[in-house]
Image 1 (cartoon, rainbow, N blue to C red):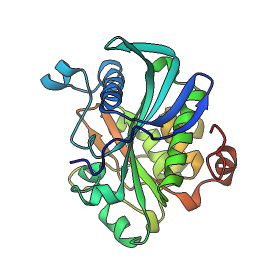
Image 2: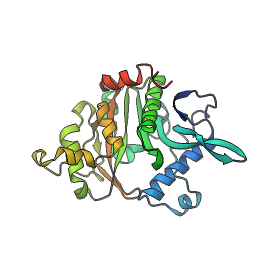
Image 3: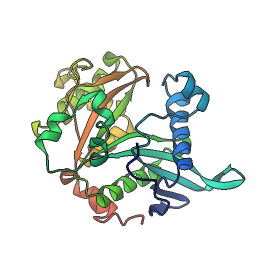
Image 4: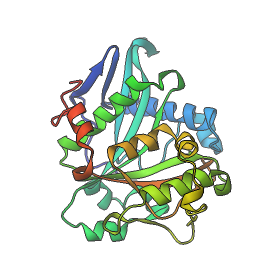
Length: 278
């Protein structure tokens, strides 16, 4: 059950040319974001759709009604809905605040990772889970990704978030084929004990698949998706262990990003008050 209705007056977080980033204001916009997710996850990538998902052509689950949905919209490309032209949704991010998760059974990623020890170590901090990030293929460029980050940073400031975390995916379900990327993450970006999360034992996949001296850095970085590289540049850590998600055809890693550890370079770039594209 949703804690609060969608806010039709939610402000624009930023604009860059014809692109705008803000939260979804209506259920219609949430449904259109789910259609974007379906197009990326099921039509372009390797996710396996059940009959209902295939019939509706929307990627959705029970967490959608609990989350805020960050959108990037292109005002130069309109789609018609009931005779009224609306800007096209070209990117989306799903945001779940700790206060809402705790009243509704917990975070989405608890089905893959044991979050409890990290949350218990930091009872005074405010956590935000990010997930279901995707951008339509023609828009996968610096502008769109920059607006998504700008929107997430604006939201972080708006809700006094202390820690960002969530699953990020590598394409493929054979960890041996991903050994270079997984080993690189394990040896160079494993979270310190203070921020350590571990994959659930029943689903745990060892990331330490190559000795550190055998890892070619250029090859490893090329193997990482842009989203994960973006998190790492900001100063994020990764959890101990990956999880294979056969439905989505991915191998998932957990990203943990304390706001206090975000690179000052990026805070200065987007603005301490998220003013760069406001």
